[in-house]
Image 1 (cartoon, rainbow, N blue to C red):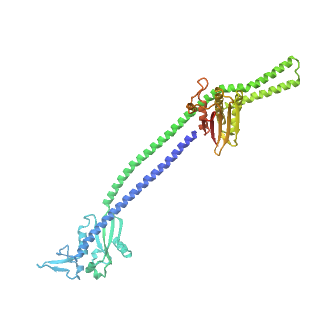
Image 2: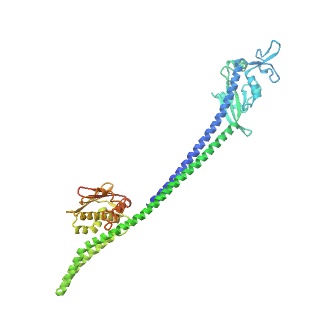
Length: 490
C-alpha cells in the first residue's frame, strides 16, 4: 500500500510536469499569435493610411480632370507647362489683359505633392514608364511596381523596406486612362482603360512602430503577471495535492499500526477461547492415554504384562500423542504471523479452521454441514482469512449455546463464480436483533458484556476482508438464523 502512495506522488509529479509544459506552450503560443496579430495590425494600419493618401490624391486629380484642368496666373513657381504647348488654349488672357495658364491634373498634383510633401507623414509621387514630363521619372522601386501592373492584373502593390536605418511602407496604385485623360495624354498613344502610370505613396513607419512596441509592452506585462499567477496557482495546487497524499499516507500508516495492534488484541482475546478448544481437543486423547497407562499398571500388578501387550499399549499411546502433536501444530499455525501471501484453495483454509474448532462444536452437540465447490486457488494471507472464519464460527457457536437451540447447526458453503470465491456461514440461532445487526462490524461493539467479549472480532474480520484481502463481507438474517457472506476476488 505504501507503494501505491509513492506511485500516486510519482503520477502527480508526471501530471504536473506535463501540465506545466502544456501551460507554457499555450501561453507562449498565444503570446506569439497576439504579437503576430499586432504586427499585422501595424502593417494594415500603415497600408490603410497609404491607401487613404492615394485616394485623397486621386480624388483631387479627378476633380481637376473633371474640369479639364484649372487655369492659374503663371508665377515663378508655376510657369506655363512646356509639355502642354500642343494643347489648344494652354494660355488665355483675361479681359483686363492678364495671362492665365492651364494646369492639367498631373501638373497640379505634382506641384501639390512637391510643395506639401511629408506634411501629413506621407510623400506622394505621380509617375509612369512612358513619361510626358521627365521630372516625374520613377525610382527603382516604382519601376518594379509599374512593371508588375503591366505584367499582371493587379492594380496595387506595396512593400515594407528599410532606408537610411528607418522603415517605410512603399505603396503604389495604378492609374487607369479615362476619357478625360486623353486631352493631355492622347499624343502618348494611350487609349481608355490603359494603365498609363501610377501614384506612389511613401510613409515612415516610426509612428506605427512606436504604437506597435507600446502595445506589445502592455501585452507582455499582462502575460508576465498572468504567467506568474498561473505558475503560483499550479505550484499551490501541486503542493496542496502532494501534502494531501503525504497526509493520507501518514494516516494510512497510523491506521495500519492501529489495525495491527487491534489485530493482535483480537488474536490475544481469542487465546482464551483457543485454550478452551485445546482442552476439548485434548480431553479424549488424554483419557485414552490414561486408560492405557492404567491397563499397564494393572497388568504389572497382576504379573500379566507381556511383550504383545506392551506393544499394543505403546502403539495406542503413540497414536494419541500424535493426535495431541497435530492439535498443537494446528493451533501454532493459527497464531503464526502472516507476512506473505500464498496460493491456496479457500476450502483448505476452511479445513484448517475446522481442525481447530470442529471438536468444540462436536462437544457442544452442534451439527456441522459442509458444501465445497471450490477448484480455483487464490493468492491471499491464509492465516488472516482463517482468523475471520474462526471468529464467525465461534460467534455462531456462542449464539446457539446462549439461546439453547435444539438441533443446533452451522452450515458452511464455499462456491465460486467468474470473478470471486464466496463463503457463506449460516446458523439457526434465530438471527440478529434489528437494532444490533447494523453495528456488529463497529470496533469495540459487543453484546456479550465486558467479561465475555472485546468487540474486536467482527471489526477485525471486516478490516481483514476489506483491506487485506480486497474482498467484501456482509451479514443478513435468514429464515431461522443469520448468514455471513464473504466474497474474495480471484
